[in-house]
Image 1 (cartoon, protein in one colour):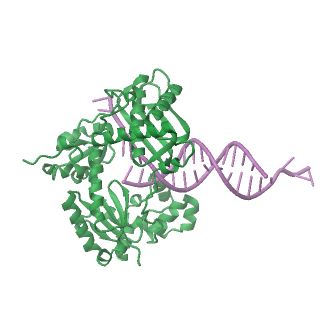
Image 2 (cartoon, rainbow, N blue to C red):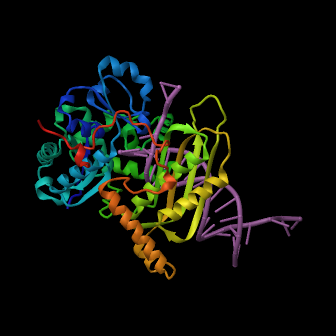
Image 3 (spheres, rainbow, N blue to C red):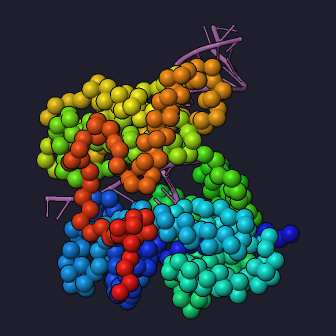
Length: 424
DNA sequence: TCTGGGGTCCTAGGACCC
DNA sequence: TCTGGGGTCCTAGGACCC
């Protein structure tokens, strides 16, 4: 059976999620901002046409926002996560072998489904239309014999609307054409550093890269470069990952809404991040053997000294209890704290994660106290699952002065009954 | 005034062992 | 006179991705 990989990728995903509930925004320029309303992280087609780049700080485009009437949204990840689930489950109706690669894209095994395999372009268009109708989210679909080429197909078809959102790169002629005309910097796996080194070597197009000596390039740049070159030649090196491996670490961090030099505030921020990360970890039935905290002053401030600190603690017995982690986090903060710095970014990492089942076999974990503690965490998680933040630990503080600013937040249309869309 | 957050994998180099 | 070499493990940092 010929291997054919499909890639479905949502167009301007975060913006599309906002637009799905606001038909009045059709045809209007829209952006979604990062946490703390800092940078542009998603742009509508109209904004791209205005040449406003990805990642630009909001304050630098204030003039354009006013001039062109750009609709601005703070990020609303509860909404995007829910819309992502809807898109993925809709796609799953067409093809069982699905590998969700990120919040807005999934690879699928197109070769295994005869009705798709035998007429890729037409099937792609039907899938696309159905997802749009069911979820309100436009997607692009690329087909190829390797993931890297499927990504390239997607990249191209997003920019060339005449293809109707679907492109079949199993067609050799089309594949060769794209390798010549697409920019090298848009190849999956070629970042800024590699791009510059390749240009110095006079490798200027994906076609040049595909034609290079993969053994020599592999020795020079490592095994991933070797795979990229083979994938550009249609030889698949990255298989489907049907059962994704469990996460190896969980990070939670944020820029504070208002920087602070107070121990108490930074401590509350640390506890807030621990609480969120621990809840997410328990949801995946995992425990951690290592907590790291880190915090620093702003990096863009010209005045004032820079200060940054980070410290870890490892646990002999895997932990999932928020209280133990908070206790440890506060102690790590005390050990590293220095008076007089305006802290603006705070975060924590839970690493060396292990599965709960694995730890249950340990002879140390099943004391009566542990069992009770785990039960308590389950109760808290279940209360908070229906109403986020209803029960919390005092260590996080009550007013949360450290939390991010979100001036342009859209309603939680899909995850909160009080904010559900009203049809008049 | 104002510049995100969450991941993974790979590699080089040091420590250590025999 | 001549002062090894191979292997493993760990860690930090780089690079990439979305």
